[in-house]
Length: 157
Image (cartoon, rainbow, N blue to C red; front, top):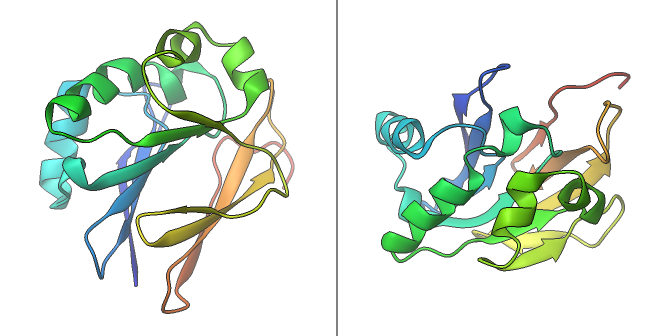
């Protein structure tokens, strides 16, 4: 079973966690909020941020990426080093993503790629329409067959 925790949504910042309810592990989608807000909202949601196994970046805009570096450093202090999945065009267009590129494991993200497997879940990226260098949504599946779709800042679906 999946749990979706929307930590922030809007022009001031976006972040969501998809949790594998069976294990308590999760995937973070975007991180456009500060570390303090991120940690407070994880606590409010009852989610342990040290259980984040991967970060998925939908696109490079600041409201989706500006907190990434400080949150990654905060997670490192908790003993957590999630892999970041992001499209190269997004890295090329974002100073926030470029700054973290040498500090963490980054793997490429592209439409139609093989599933991203983390937190006991499978995430399938798909291209979306948005005024960004590259933009993605995700279909995330749990082993029990539960699934959800996650899309943000869509132009044409």
